Image 1 (cartoon, rainbow, N blue to C red):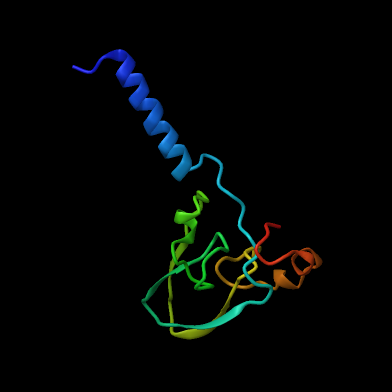
Image 2: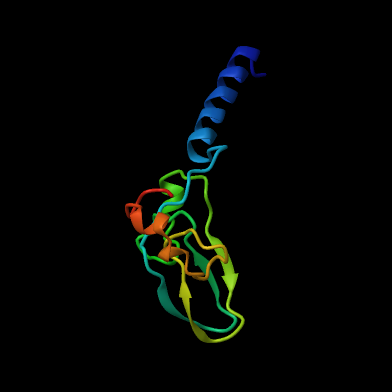
Amino acid sequence: MIRPVALRTWRRDISSWLDRWFPKTPAKSVVALKTPIKVNLVAGKTYRWCVCGRSKKQPFCDGSHFFQRTGLSPLKFKAQETRTVALCTCKATQKPPYCDGTHRSEQVQKAEVGSPL
């Protein structure tokens, strides 16, 4: 039988660990680049677009969001057709994962790469 004091200590330890790895308030995405990246998508293939901006394999996720404890997750999407598209790397698009031209805005162009908007 677990004593009440030990149980409270255990819960506090688990909560502390969970809060570190899975923050309740996600970090903000950061500007990875200030121009989109053109990629060839293959119909039926599933991709994971980097939401946090910290991936070294832009525009796709490399797991950096997890190891840097951002609380963010990649956007999983399936290509409907084989085609070349421009994927956003400024992370400010209103049509994720596709570029909508937001990178041309003054706010994005003045931002430092690696900083949130």
